[in-house]
Every structure is written in structure tokens, then in C-alpha cells.
Image (spheres, rainbow, N blue to C red):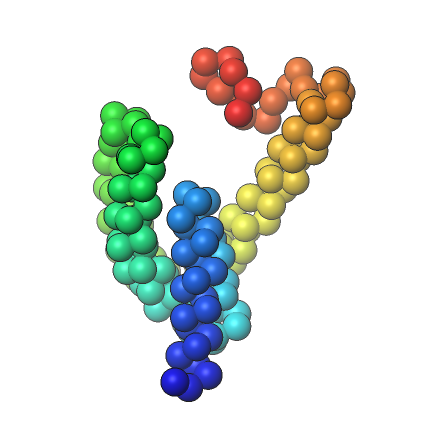
Length: 145
């Protein structure tokens, strides 16, 4: 087995670890493929999507066995996500690669900012800080995440 194959397998493992937890394996896999393995952005997205299919099936079965899968809520997300995903894939094929790369970079930066501040709020919440009154994204039922 050559080094290139091993690197792709390691990228798949990294994406699988994150994706198996339901945290968006592509958020990690696409940068690994593009930055470290020099795969084009469109091809990296396609690899991510195809690897997502078996990974999500296995993960869904495990989450269902653990009674963590709410099919009604999942369908409320999956149906519009499928429609917008199909429409967006047509747009992405026509958009310049540089625009897609920059849009993904902005998404990752925004995600990092949200995660940093939500972790900060959780820290203050755990020690009784005043920020616990102002959750970044409150749950509809009023409970804490």
C-alpha cells in the first residue's frame, strides 16, 4: 500500500470519528482532502458526500438502537435539506472554485466563533456566571443543552 492510499484512509478515519458522533465529518474531511491531500474542492465535496452515505446509515442504526433517533424531527430536517442540497449542487457546479473555497472558509470561521462562545458560556454557566442567563441558542423547551 502506498503512502497516498494510507493518507486517504487516515482522512476517512478522521472524518468518520467526527461524523459518527453526528458532528459533521465533512467539516473536517473536506479541509483535510483539499489542504493536505491536494484534492480539488468539488472533488473533495463529492468524496465527502459519497463517504457520508454508508457512514450515516451505520450511525443511524446505532443511534436508533440507543433510542436517540427522532424520525419525525429527522424528516423535518432531511426533506428540506435534500431539496436545498440538490439545488445547491447545481449552483456549486457553476460557481468559481475560489468563491466556494472562500464561502467554506467563512463558514468554518463562523462555526469556530459560535463554538468558542458557546463553550465560554457553558464554562460560565457551570461556575454560576451571569452569562448562563443568555444562552447562545436556547432550546425550544427552555431546557439547557
